[in-house]
Length: 361
Ligand code: HEM
Ligand SMILES: *[C@@H]1O[C@H](CO)[C@@H](O)[C@H](O)[C@H]1NC(C)=O
Ligand SMILES: *[C@@H]1O[C@H](CO)[C@@H](O)[C@H](O)[C@H]1NC(C)=O
Image (cartoon, rainbow, N blue to C red; front, side, top):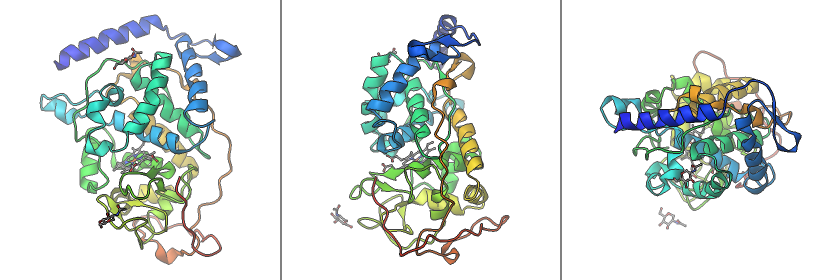
């Protein structure tokens, strides 16, 4: 069954390459816009449509956060360890979470993801693009809207024909660091790369860990691709923002902010703490490492040689000057639970004024 699938995918990939020769020169798309490859023109139409009708005119809001999360939940359905046991291990960034939504959105770790899957589906259908391509494109476009955001690579041409991912491949917030690093290692990510992927949580909020407080962010600036997440996850936890403790939740430092158990543990584990701390004062490394690790995530289980580079369709993020990394008002360096032994914690200062409550997104 596995080799038959591979053959089918290989045949489709050959067809795609034949239909879209990889000419390097510029081609003209509609409205005088240019792309490196004619096969990329359709993505301008998708871009205009989703910026207006999915992302509220180019915002970095809830649909963007959910779309970025979806890139991961589709792609991480890929396990070489399962293949090695002779089982089907998933086709990775294949759109299976949309093609087989009734199966995959029922997996426990995919709680709440059905909303964005169903919100995105009509756009993919309207433009005749594969679900796997659409999911990665929407995530890349979306995060380019965030202040200080990255410009992710986008390769097009994933097959629309696939199989459902097996369950239990998506990490849970209640998982230990050992479990997360093992699962992510199976998919090809080093411990540092797991931290690099979690840069995504700087533009994130939760709806389902504590369902009584939907829209509760993981840091104080969920619309901004800044370093606050890496600072605030290291502060001593003092409260639960909602209705007490839930599975996958630990004490957070600020009213209106929720900390995942997994984020709190990865911030403090000796294998990941120094990469975590490094992002507090190095925004450009945060951006470039996220770009690098996302180019890996976006093609998990796919053969990038069969894909066409349509990165030029992804908007160049606005050159926003971000405020310097700060301790939230009311906190001091004494509240930081420093976990990286190799490098001193940076001498950041606190915002003035009394402690504030973080607003839901
Ligand atoms: C250790 C691995 C990870 C765990 C355990 C984890 C867990 C979670 C959980 C529990 C939520 C809240 C969902 C909800 O209640 O609505 C969440 C949100 C989110 N995650 Fe992750 N995550 C992980 C890795 C990633 C990665 C690799 C990405 C993307 C590259 C990502 C992007 C996001 C985003 C953007 C949100 C916010 C969604 C929203 O605001 O609606 N996460 N994550
Ligand atoms: C992708 O597959 C879905 C069914 O899962 C189908 O409805 C859709 O039309 C397909 N899209 C393309 C571009 O083939
Ligand atoms: C809050 O949690 C308690 C148990 O800890 C539960 O009985 C109650 O129904 C919860 N409230 C809401 C609004 O979910």
